[in-house]
Image (tube, rainbow, N blue to C red; front, side):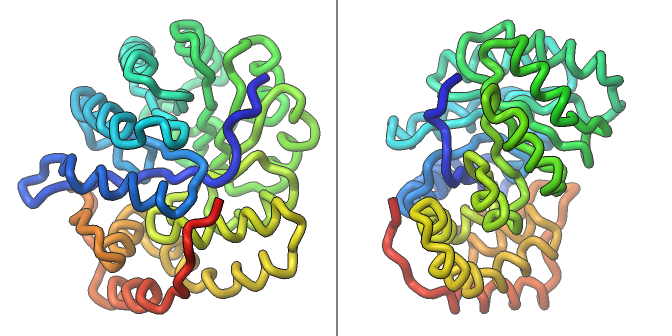
Length: 299
């Protein structure tokens, strides 16, 4: 199996202009901010990127723009899951042709599928492309939790299923994936506040929306853990945790955008029906962003 994808991946926010259209110019700044912060990869059209509120054409535009701006500096993961197998395959083939490194595939998220239906969908999408697949386990939205045993079996059966983003927020489940099935699949934990635990446990990496706001800081913690310097990792984690917790405790997409706006990258508000944060929460996130210690990009 491939081991090329690891470390801190930014689940990119998608900026919208005042007229509601995708702001391609600011999206390029969002990409550069993460790469300049030393992240190991970027993710287009994930949950933080508000893919569910976009048309298929807009999703293709975001993927193309991110791949173009990344220009080979880091891998690009394109989230191509959709409400129908047909659309997921179309988006996956487009992203593969556009130059994505890995495809992340979430299951349909309105009517909960049975496990057999979910597995049939995932096998169909993976079989339609040739590049690696990252399963996106998001039980809070899909209604289906992919157990470690199911993931391990699927990865053993389907050659290009090589990664999983586990957003169950269950570190025990992530631990089983890491220790029991690490020979067939690499685990990324998709819950930002579990970064310290996940990397210490042996996860391949983390996928973090907060990396939009503080990429160099999360990368620094990851590098300290990778180098075996737990004391430094914990000290740095303690310094950034108040901001991370403030973002995680608020409506997440809105909070990430508030953090980016505070950092001087005007990504605007989320697309309706999501609404912006209240003034007090925005002020708290802004003050914490402004208080962040300065770091150079870490690699």
